[in-house]
Image 1: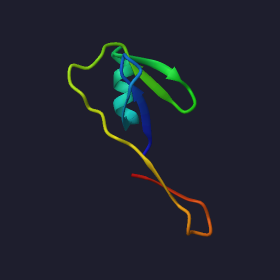
Image 2: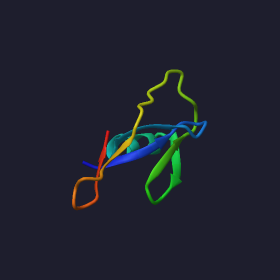
Image 3: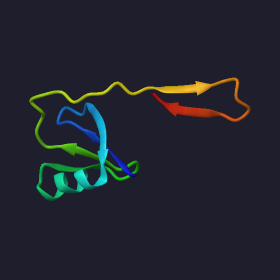
Length: 71
C-alpha cells in the first residue's frame, strides 16, 4: 500500500493518504505536486476542518540493528 504525503494550503502536514485518493485530488485540480521525492502534494485551498495526526518516530537502542518504527 503506497501512501502520499500531503500538505494543506498553509504548508502544514496532514495525515498521509492513499495513492488513488491523491490521484483524484490532482485530476480534479484541488491539489498540485509540491515535491517529487518523496512524492508530496499540496492542497490549493485550506481545509475548513482539521485532519491532523501527530506522527512520531521511535528508535530501539537495545536492538543490534537500527530499528525504527512509526508511532
